[in-house]
View 1: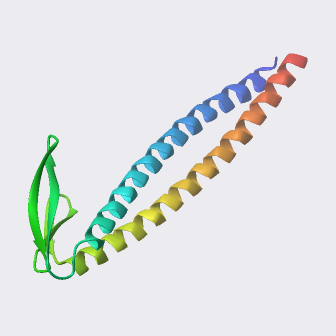
View 2 (view 1 turned 180 degrees about the vertical axis):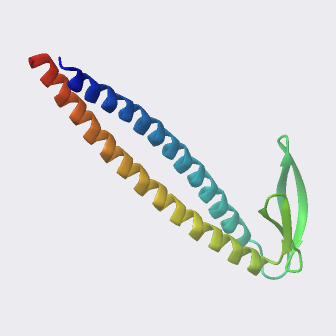
Length: 141
């Protein structure tokens, strides 16, 4: 086998390793975005179910598998984490608007990440085919 052919094989093998690592990274990003999207949708649905008038008794998790029963009415405020440790007090409509915007942004991010993953998978498939061809050529030499 020529050193040039061996060099190309090594180069493609390294590229495949890099692409596989990047593909795993994108898969993790997709998972995290999907989790955030599901959480935001669940929060939006929960807030939509709150009454516009009157009161409702709701149960809130406070951590450690402990829940607290609280009373909600149309004047109750909702606290929304908007950034690095920043919490803003909002009303129901404002919170729903914020969540809808977050859901839209997460959908865009998910779509972009899925596009990146497809692109990397195509490059990976192409590199593997090239590597396979080179290995066959090296065995025939």
